[in-house]
Image (cartoon, rainbow, N blue to C red; front, side, top):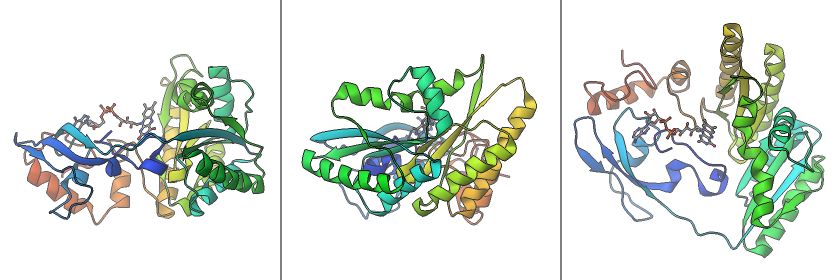
Length: 318
Ligand SMILES: Cc1cc2nc3c(=O)[nH]c(=O)nc-3n(C[C@H](O)[C@H](O)[C@H](O)COP(=O)(O)OP(=O)(O)OC[C@H]3O[C@@H](n4cnc5c(N)ncnc54)[C@H](O)[C@@H]3O)c2cc1C
């Protein structure tokens, strides 16, 4: 997770790996071992090497220890589900929750197709196959109630259903089941099926436009497009099922993905919010960071002159 700068669904409240890691122990390509951080909340001592290694996808060294900032378990955790007549209504609600600064721990979105797939796969009851937001609030009981009222109000203004609530752990787990099973539920659609998962992230003010674009383009490209989003972060995935024996189908997915990535860049977003660049997104990294790529290359060459750490990942050296 540190290597890809990954994040969980609670990143909206607690941050991503970039914010929760205070230091790393790293073995460098020449065999040296370094410690990049410390235990203090603040430091102005030198370059931020911790965040240089986070997200470097194993190209600069091997991470052997991760020093994490811990957060207390909140007094009260409350989860709710809200259905919407359209995806746009759902995403707009999430956008407004963040823009109004309502403290929230998670806002996850599933589109209608993904809800249908998850309901079948996880045998969920009392839940509809329409665009849906999953909310979770962490805090004291009174502060949660206050924030819930605000979010419910915003949802209603965007045509949302009344909230379905879960306060105890068992109910909460059930409620989140549809969310956790997303990948496996899509994989199970076809015998020996595979899943191609996109990952773009845009500024919160652009998230509604980007999700709408993805939905329209999926239709145009003729691809099935179950969607799941960490809406509070402006980050979403289109979870595309495909048959690995059908080469044309795969090409179509890649073309759709390219179009979506370029739209994210146009909206001042990023080509990946949490999955990383790897091999498949190298060309897009050049588009996102044309001016920074030479600096990244010179760091790589300095730390790994023999190019032994994940050569060819993120960018090509030559
Ligand atoms: C079903 C599914 C759901 C997912 N959901 C999320 C999600 O909610 N949030 C999210 O952020 N991501 C998600 N992802 C993507 C996921 O974050 C990445 O796949 C994950 O970070 C990879 O972790 P891993 O341990 O499997 O690493 P690997 O896939 O083994 O490695 C990832 C990269 O890190 C490098 N690496 C591995 N170990 C080290 C090390 N010790 N030091 C240096 N480099 C190293 C590898 O070389 C590689 O480049 C999901 C993926 C799947 C398949």
